[in-house]
Amino acid sequence: MVHEAGLAAVLLLVFGIAASLDLAFVSASVQLELSAHAFELALIAIPMTFIVVSGGIDLSVGSTMALSAVVLGLLYERGTPVSLAALVGIVAGMAAGALNGYFVAKIRVHPLIVTLATLAAYRGLAEGISLGRPISGFPPAFLGFGSGNIAGLPIPGLIPPLPRAGCRRSLTSSLAR
Picture (cartoon, rainbow, N blue to C red):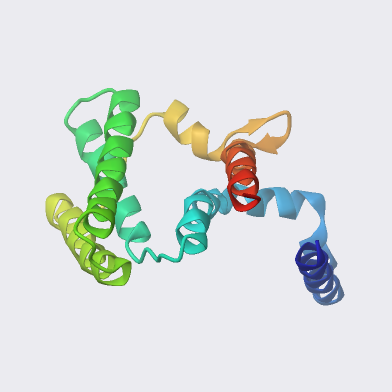
């Protein structure tokens, strides 16, 4: 409980300094806008918590995310419905993570070595299969998922609290043992 109070105090200090520099920064509208742009980091930070708590490290999360996004984009470009392309992109990310996990848990290679290698491999694979070019032209409904609003709240800002609540429960119950 002391750690949480300390973090809350640091957060209040940061907000106090930000308010003294630019009062608009601490407004609800700016904070809602910022939450819409931070959801990717939040979704990566949630599983990273489990990895760090268990004494591991994963350097390849950004490359895994890039590979998943490229798989989604290339499939959509080739006529796959965006929902199916997104599902396959998620499965590609899960497969990349499972491969990391296999080398760490079964082959017993240190996580730093495995994820450093897969950082380069997944990033190179993503860049290689996309030829380093941007992929665009997604349908408005798909783009709305990343930039839309529900009752004035940004959709991306509503996503992280759901897995965070489940992970918090899991961590609390497993660490209490």
